[in-house]
Figure 1: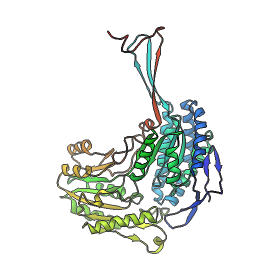
Figure 2 (figure 1 turned 90 degrees about the vertical axis):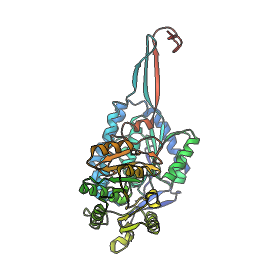
Figure 3 (figure 1 turned 30 degrees about the horizontal axis):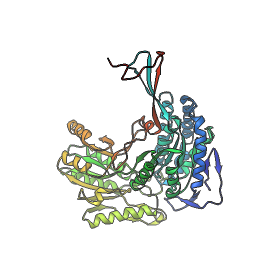
Figure 4 (figure 1 turned 135 degrees about the vertical axis):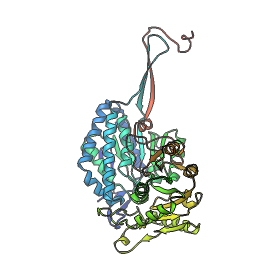
Length: 493
């Protein structure tokens, strides 16, 4: 299937553009092609978005929200269809794909409700016969750059708050997972969203992504992806004085104390580490475990990992699907080799799987290292694959120090039955998300999503906080005294 750009409410075919294939990572089959757009397509999309935004901003917010309700109903109606496509293009198991589509439904409903809030403030003026308030105002055109690991969830985290706030969108999805963008654009078309409000431009990061960040009419940028690319986006956006929201890497840890429920901890670690084949920014890649229960937890983890079924995510019995592509496979294996060279003890996995049907796709064996040094490359750098590093500690204080001793700060978790330890950890863990007696993944859409340090730049996706990315505060003073009143001067008692 040949995908086309969606610009100004039209599907634009341009046979002069080069194309690239879209590959199913489970079996290597080609699903279709996408155009490798140029700066020209971005300029056209920005023009259409700018034109549409003038009228879209004048639509009452509750009416803008009505479109999101319609989108939610369409997503719900097509949930299984979308989940099947998502698994084919990204590789995650079908159960997870259904959950991701549900996340898009939830976000549409949540942000639609914001259409009747978009709260500002009314405050008393210091002067008589004067009214003071603040309101949220749209910024204009939002440029969205989204990753392949959650191709519909993250797209909805960014686009729906932008839309309900009165902005229009130019969206560059990942080349690895363009079908979710195509399907979402079709839904936008079906519900009758005005032309130009949502525009989708396929293409490479260096060409299309850069053109979006540099375009003078695109005033806010929201990016999720690697730290390296995100830093470049921030630098380039800063030169143009744009608001830039970044959500980047993670090196997330599960802390297991000696009083933990090990059965629960085991489930939480397996889900966090090996779900989505470890390709989540919130994936657990470090297990920080108290020395008193280290051996028992290791034994249980190894035995449970042996039972995991690996294969095509469309098979409901499969628990771990492929990684996204060959480059990812090689990167994961590179880090595993470094771990071996640096003296970590490999308990299980540590290899590319290439037997039988697995040889057609990109599969890496779920991998567990133990006796990992907290400062080693294995424990410090984001691998983005199904690899766990077990690190031994002797106390809660040491566990917190190890948890915080990385450049990222997205998600962390503690398993304990001691309320004092739990509240101390909640306070001291330096991450944007903290889980108690749960894994490091599983964010809900009505809370802010994002992290500290190298994970981001202070902004958040999801929740009401997402509106801060796509709005400016406007303060309004209404003086009905009939005379000039000067703040701080005429009020000088």
